[in-house]
Image (cartoon, rainbow, N blue to C red):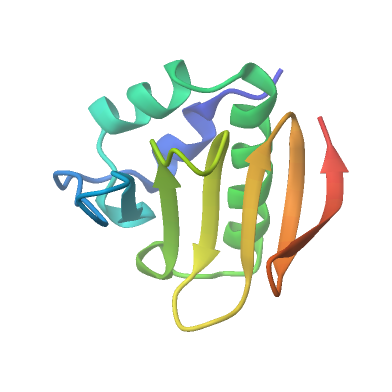
Length: 114
């Protein structure tokens, strides 16, 4: 069983930033997520979505992508899960319904199921 504790390797602190007034979502660089925010992400998502997040973050770590470039979106009313992306690229994923979804041009492909 993978826990979000894998992510704790990457974790530091910063308060959440609202994206818009109409649809509030939080997007933070991974390097700015503290234990309180990590706990919130973990408890507000399904076990499979949390496993998915740990999986993609491990992939980014193996690819030596800096934590400051990895963006995590949570509490987004348009995503039933967690969004993950890299700044300044089109590499975007979500962990929804126990699936790792790779997004391109508003369409997704399932990359892995948990």
